[in-house]
Amino acid sequence: MIKDEICIVCLIKGYAGKYHNSLVKEISSNFGTNDLSQRIPPHVTIKSPFFTKNINEIEEVIYDFSKKLKKSSFNLEGFDHFRKNVIFINVIANDYIINIARNLMELLRKIKGITFSEYEDKQIHYHATIAYCESEKIFNAIWSYLSNKRPEYNVYFNNITILKKVKDKWKIHKEFDIG
Image (tube, rainbow, N blue to C red; front, side):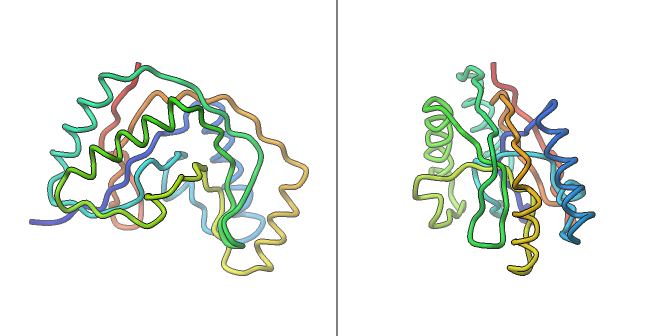
């Protein structure tokens, strides 16, 4: 049986999603980074990529889980980075959303064969990646470029979505509405 590589996210839609995509394209064009908008939709990761043989079981868990939830909102606000190679828009999540993610992770841990990274066992820093930098020089140039930009968007946490990797692109496999 073939294993699918998937990840679980909340899609960023509306004006915030359009802003995210346009900023990614702008940075890619100006600094030669990979255009992430061509490889993955705007999102906030709930569960980082992993391989599974049984995507149906994961779909069932998320479907049952999402039916019990109400939509909530979070903010996309300002920029930050991991080391000097990942630049992102900050996600300011409320306790309700943080608990949704924790509870979903606990349900996923019960499914045989799903792996978790060391970062998923800690307090996760939710974010919306806009660039991967291959050198400190590129990082510094992008960071300087972003210094006069101040994104502020209120976004609904109204979906839990399974993305599936097809060749080198992440495609929406199944979206579960909340609220």
